[in-house]
Amino acid sequence: MLCPEVMNFKPPRHYLHFERIDFKKTDFPAVITKHYFNHAVSLILPESYNIPNSLKDCISVDSDYYQIKDLHVSELLNKQFIDAFIKKGELTLLTIGNKVDLCNTIAVTPTGVLIISLIREDFQILGLEGNASYFDYKTNTRNVVTINLTADHFVPGKKNYERVKRALENHLNLIFDVIIIWEPPDEKMCPSSVAAWFHERGYTVSLCRQKFSCKTEYNINIPTVIDGFNNTAFFEWLGLFSISGEIENENTSKYVSTYECPKPNILVDQVKYLQYTGFFSKQRILQIYNALREYILPPNNLPWCSFHVQGFSDTPVSWDLKEHTFFTDGDNSYTILFFPNGKCIIRQSLSSNNKLRIAL
Image (cartoon, rainbow, N blue to C red; front, side, top):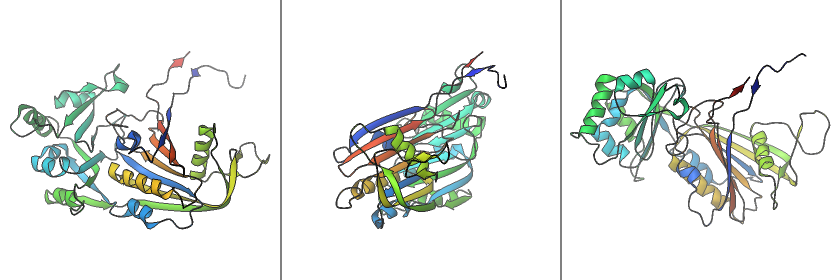
């Protein structure tokens, strides 16, 4: 035998969930409103010769975010900061440069929750209450501390506030490089106010902008939707198109690995692909969703359009406060497929939460 089977590795399960909704009757799906740490946005737009400014502007206008070097976590407990940016508007903050399964990491959700994910040794030094990580509960090598910064009792002078502040200032002085977005409650207020606040406190603050790339494919077959169509095949085509994979329009035996567009399909003049990479707030994603559901409706005469959102691989949470780790690929993403009849299909994807089981 050239390759004797000495171990039996079963592939880790990957969570996929499909949902169909009527976007004309539904406000916003939870897959958007509870996904806070968005890294990339991509659109696939068939037969779109002129993309409206309303769609492009909601992605790129005022979409800057900021990087803060060597941030002391205790700064996030400052009452002035909490009152100005946590309790007003929506602030999203995430550690960068750290591996969520190997290093300490922090995040602040738009709901005002500070998440501190720590290796066991640092958690013991910190001295605050926390839960054992779901992914390491047997070995107990990681713990997660969650603090509601908006709680009524979390104010200077209260025991809980003073205990947390003392732990972060004296017991374990955690320092991270982070990226931050603030969506103000009033459009007259400037989102850069949060950057100015940290700059005034002596931190190095850098302006970051989204990176944009696009491509257009001409005379290409695209899949269409009929009753009982294959969800998996359609979304597989979207993924292959996104990475510029070789897609044959007709049957071919040129290569065993050649991919053919799923049937039924139609030939279109062109398909545009737009990708923006950086850091997107939940509010920004909701604006894009609104623009797309307006764009797909008649009289634009589009067969469909797709909207894909990819989360950060090393975020400590995926949806809402659900703990996340990087085990196989760190995937936490979703794709929304819009149709001109007001229907859409949502595909939610999440990497496995289960470790490999080795059967000898």
